[in-house]
View 1 (tube, one colour):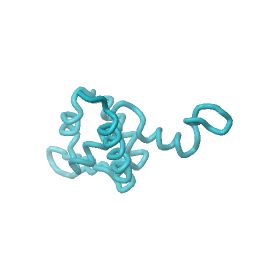
View 2 (cartoon, helix red, strand yellow):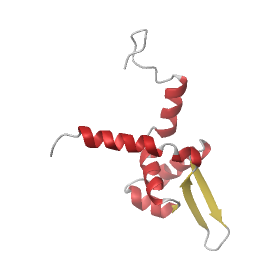
View 3 (cartoon, helix red, strand yellow):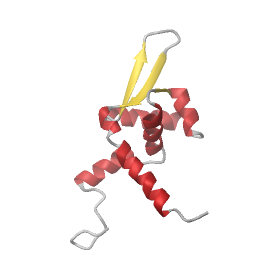
Length: 112
């Protein structure tokens, strides 16, 4: 992708840079994917779905996504404590984009 001045697309541009900051990283798209497919999910359940993600990485990713308004954290006052994560309305608007990315992969992956 080229800009009018011949440089590669500006990843620091307001809209593009903002979008990348919300979904960049190895795990964020996968977190959005699993929350879209499964609804509200507890921390350990999400960690199992993701596979070999570390506790620290998952915690940091969730916290960053909560701060960006993508994920909602619901804490229930019970013993033992119960916490569930789900997508906010803003987070749910990313799901069609991810579906399009999946479709693109299906359309363009090399034959097996």
